[in-house]
Length: 230
Image (cartoon, rainbow, N blue to C red; front, side):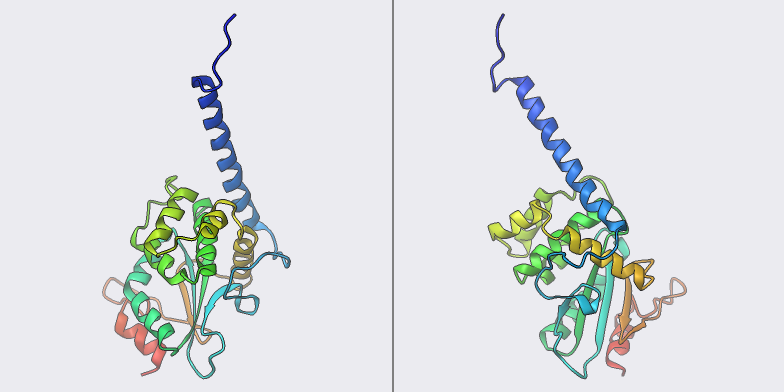
């Protein structure tokens, strides 16, 4: 009776199946936590403030400037549109220290949103969140199409000049899955039920009412006026 080589087809198939099971379990684990309450012992990425709903904060120490809270889901195409419309302006506000900006990465749309949110937190540790944020929306994949994997997110990080092995491990190991849950819990407490939802100084900006009325979300001039008050 002959024995099969350890490198034969059966072994390859077995390893592939094991790998797929591990991935499914990992994705299921990160998605399942989204219905849980706040985990006060969760590891937090850099620049995160519990007081700001576990958001990733820029210019948190500034006083007397507009405070912009952006609640978003990385798989949300309307969020991508908001980023494309106002992202450069928001980055300039951050760079020029003219606003405090807080990004809240929710996971309404499924497990791939949670994976992306975890990776975004990992990018924050590398001081590359804004670049990762822009790169993801610029290359927005179809919703829950199986495209957003650890490998995809690590490759996407290269577009944001992230080359650290620590980022790769953070993405693969889901280091911030509990933080992802805490952002979701915070959003629930604030009754955030759609994305994007944007507040300036605690007041939601005006949504459009028709194809010609873009509101303050998608009319760049109106958004600037809402931020600057002029």
